[in-house]
Image 1 (tube, rainbow, N blue to C red):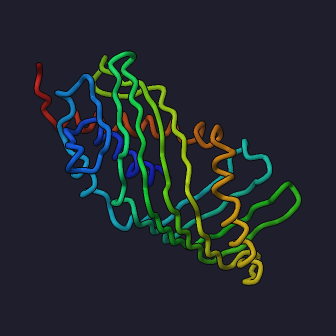
Image 2 (cartoon, one colour):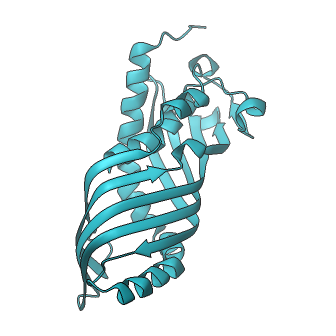
Length: 233
């Protein structure tokens, strides 16, 4: 999971340290009121380094306790994700007052293919198990966030908060309950409810993801600072 988050939020750390030209890179609103001397590498450079596809051999997912109606675990293997290179940055604003960074990343089209094994329980009553293949197509994933920029000990961020929305998600699940008819029904249900589920559980999702992302962004920024000479005013 951390490998995927590193890739997505390397985009943010790259934006913090880049001299992006909006008319060239499609960034419609970049207003770095301060720290312009720190904005010294390009978002396009980050894009070039993103693996396409992103491959992860194995990934274990444990359902958080905050999601009370679903318990259990799932294992993913041969995980393949495409579409990260198509990211857009429609908004990036660093305000002088309070040094608050606000940003929006858009991923117009993501395709996820994986093998899975799952042993879940819905509403403490209905078993949901199986193994097979899952294919998911996500349209217009939007990551909005804010953080406070830190300069006291190098460039960093704190108090990061993130919200995730998706325009739509289309599922093609095989192997659920070892029954293809049920798998087709499950796919249709997920098509209808996943986007609204994400919208309705923003606090849980943000609480889970934000601390991990903040730690990773700071690690990336520190690594960049160690290898980049920043011009002093």
